[in-house]
Length: 139
Image (cartoon, rainbow, N blue to C red; front, side, top):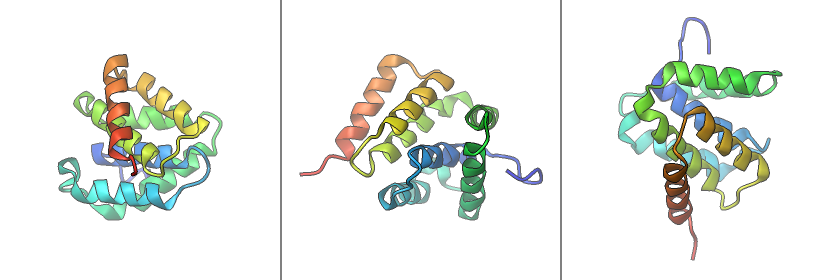
């Protein structure tokens, strides 16, 4: 993030979603559509300026190129995100991961790291993951 544009709680949620999408080095269209849909429709993003998404996405991608970039990303997210939205962040992360119908090792590892960094209870995490899987099932 630019110094004149500190990360907001909504930016942190977008950053988590972008990170999950980019974790396998292949940002898929289904994942981008999922992010766009959530930002456009969820109450937590009601007053969010969507013009910030490219800046947040670029920040995430730049951090992924750094040695300690993931730790830096989690530091930014924890600083910007109130604890009451930690589970929301995990729900959004799981929905993006499930959006393309496949979960690679990189996405699974990042989801595990998000659970750890945001202190998501094991049972709550399992319920969130199961709900995301159910929402993205196909016939």
